[in-house]
Each structure stands twice: as C-alpha cells, then as structure tokens.
Image (tube, rainbow, N blue to C red; front, top):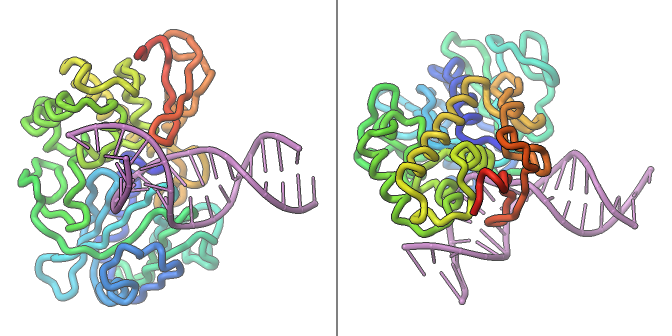
Length: 319
DNA sequence: ACTGCGTCCTGGGGGC
DNA sequence: TGCCCCCAGGACGCAG
C-alpha cells in the first residue's frame, strides 16, 4: 500500500528518468485508470503527446510531473495517484530492470499483466523510453491537470515542492516531510491547534488528507504506537505536548521509511526499477496482531475502525 | 461539524 | 481440484 514513503521513493526514482523525456505515444489499456480526466481519454492523450516532462513533485500521496508543449513555463502536469496497488516502472535503454519482462538492453518485451497505461517516447538523450502505470486493483489514476498557485498561499522553503500545484491536488494538505510543515514552524503550530480543536478520533484525523497528508493506515498505526496513543481517543482530549509527539513520530517514521526505500509486503509495491523496500521489517504495530509489543511484550491487538484494521498495544496505548 | 458507510477494483487465500 | 466468499483499503460522496 503506497503511502508517503513509498510514493517518495518512486518519485526519487522517477527524477532520474523523466525530466526531459518527450512523449510520443499514449496507450490507455484500462479506461478506469484515467477516469478522473476532464475530457476523457482523448483529452488525456492530446495533452500528453508531444509534451516534455519536468521534475516530478509530490504532496502527500499525490505525485505530479510538470509538462510543457512548446517551451516556456509548464502550465499543466501529469498527476499520478497509486492508491492501493499502483506501480510506476520505467523501461528503456538507460534503465536496468530486474526480474520479469526484461528484454534486450532493458527494453520491455511483454508488459506486466496489470499494466493500465503506457507512455512511450524518448528520454533526454533521444533513447527510447517508456513509463508504465501498473495497477492490479485499479484504484489509482492518472490525469492531466492545470497548475495553479497553492491555495494555502505558503511558499515552499528550501527543498519544498513548488508553490504551484495541480488543481486536483489543491485540496490536499501539506505533508510532514514538506519543509513548510517542519516542527515548530508556523504552519506546524497551526496544524497542531487545528487537531487539538477536533473531537474526532485521532486516527481519523491522521488519515484525513485535508488536515495533513501522506499518512495511511500503516504509518498511522506506527506513529500512534510510537507516541503511545490509542487510535480512538478524541483529539481534544490529548495534550498539545502529546499531539506534538505524535506528529513528530509520524514524520520520523516516514522519513526513516524513505531512507530504506519504503515498506514492501509483496510484489505490489516496488520502486521504478522493480525493487522492494525494507521498512516492513521495522514495523512495530501494523500487521502484528497477537505478536508481542517490542516495548512491553504484551500481545498486540487488532480492531476494526473506520472499516479498516487498527493494530495497537493494549497496554502502551490505553483508551 | 462529525460519523459511518457505500463505491470503485482485483487476486490471493481460507474454508469446505 | 475447485469454487465461493472474504479481505485488503485511498479517496470521495452521501446520508443521517
């Protein structure tokens, strides 16, 4: 399940291959994968053919690549959301692919069976290269969207995503790896107070991408475990100090995961070269029902919450 | 404002 | 061996 660290790992991988790539051909094998495109497949294709990619950017779990057709400033971007099972793979003479589907010189021979969209063209050096969107469960999507100034009006600090975002991403909040949300920053303080004012269960808030983005079920459980907070506790009953601890735990668990290439449980998550990440061996809560808590040895519990599983230590994370 | 649930989708795995 | 059912859940929409 790609959450922020997995998406960021993929974005970093794409940085090496996409800038300067020109699209010659668009092949939508599964129309649902471009279902959000205004104007449908035709508009999607028309906007991409002939376009040149810029540097991939990201906010939360949304990724986008600016495109330009005739030079000048990019005004649109290819937006990619991987959802549950989306993967992006780059094939071409300059990539070194592992495992299946590898043809001579890294050029793909048989696309993966869950390939939904193929963007084929040439890389910066003119070599054949293609970007494959593979998505078993078809929850993910691609769309071309206009770039606009970010609604929150915050300009990125050093290393922050550009101040422009695609229109379809503008309602998504900043994420905890965004320098704008660095601990103790003004935007971070605003976020803390906003959470403190809510009486919703704390995990619901962590998962609300309009409040803070990038956190999914896995990293929410990990952050709550680290901060010793029960997922169901109303946020307004948790001290500011504790909420601060929680947000910082969420940020650090995600940046640690980025360092090792994200969390892979199976072949559903791999980076652009088809390699797995290693964070799953560092998980303390997610997926560990009835296994001993690594702090207190109590067996961890699993409960249903919001239609999904929550894993927690009943002793360290009391209600 | 807040909560809960349905919708989209597929394939892997458990149970029989 | 085979078949059915359930499960995983990110984002979003809608009802209460």
